[in-house]
Length: 72
Image 1 (tube, rainbow, N blue to C red):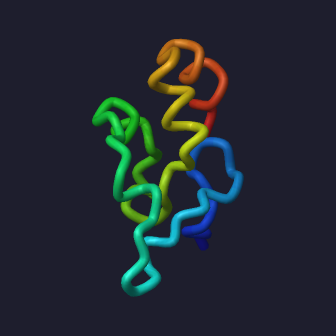
Image 2: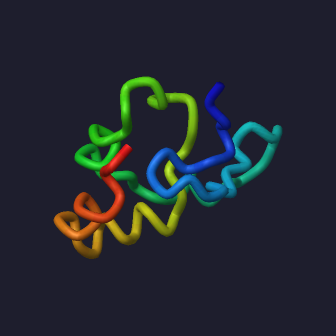
């Protein structure tokens, strides 16, 4: 079973609170690159949010991010 509270890349808590009614989660205010979303393993797509740290790391250096995290 996939834990929706864990980032599909680093496995740490994603701190997403978008499922809480009337909550203004950070994930509603950040653009997640399509390239990064495409890297999510199929079985985890639409089941767990990517954490902010991974989004920022990908934006900073895509090649390094892929080398380090795309081992899932």
